[in-house]
Image (cartoon, rainbow, N blue to C red; front, side, top):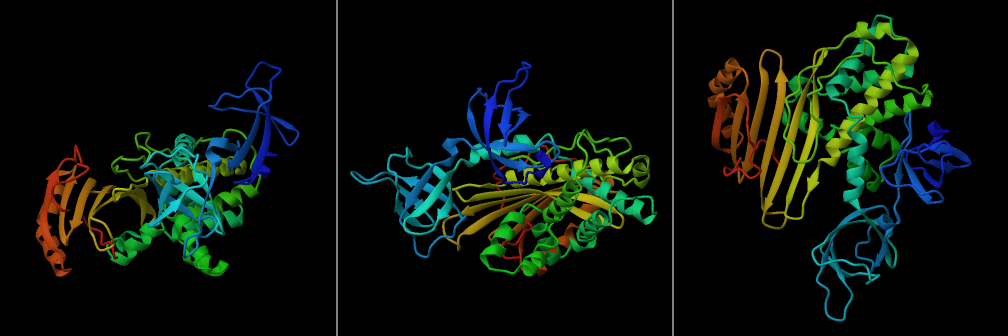
Length: 458
């Protein structure tokens, strides 16, 4: 029953007393299911639930009535689109008039006026009806994000672990030792083939495409394709290389096989370093070691165990990408930040480049200057752990390189002159370039020097 539920499915439930004095039961569609909830559940209570993860054990989001407040506004010109997400800020209420919201450069009166909104409060709204009047839903994004983080944290796995496992599958298939279904093998091969190769990251267009396909922009790109009225074939082509899209396709195939429930066996499965931290807001990039593939480990597993382990790995990789998406910040004062894992293919091996991108806009309007800061962390074979911080503002670029290996730090130092010449040839004014041995102990949120290696127009 649970496996037939799809993500987004709305369910009505009633809390029932457990006769065995255990956790409360939920009565859903005439069936009794044991519930595990961080919220108190009272027998007889009516709940509205939404399926957010239809995997081995369904995860349901409790839709609290407080999070479903609807408001109406006069229709703007040009009209908004149904489903569109808007950012709003409440303005001081004029004497005798209704409260005002500042949305998309417009001051609009709020209805119902009884909705308590102190001046300066920010809201996230979703357009339900773009007609006259406009119907909007107030989304409590902070609570939704917190619950999403709590759900994803225990499931997330480093992408290096997932990619090593996928490569092990293709290796075993080439030796005819793997009996996974053909459609599963084909999807796995497509995911690996579409990853950026290490020599492509040195080209602006290659890096730009890799960032777009990292997975954290998947829903935004899909929404843009829908707004552009692209056909299904055009949308599939545009998003064909997206990592999250590929993993979602693989997850769909696995769930369609109705894999037996139960804890997946991890005997012989690739291990991952426990010290790799998850991507969380305000965290700095972490240099992740390369995960070696081990095709022989799969030979010790039967087909059901292989499918269970693959499902666990794919779900863990998707959970990590979701955490990166939740770590993205966009603040009213002009600051934005992104934190993501960028897999790079080097022959039959994979390196993980973790990137944090910060933008601080100085002034208002599209013509205002921005301070861009990019922080990178990677662990490369023969070079060791490397951290890089690059900043760009007003056409002035600066960079600092840290290397845990003495030889690598010296190598960076020897090539700083060449780097300066190439940056100047690109039309940039060079500030400070330096290379140091060790690792950055602190990374200031607001560096005093104008730093970054990212062109906003690239």
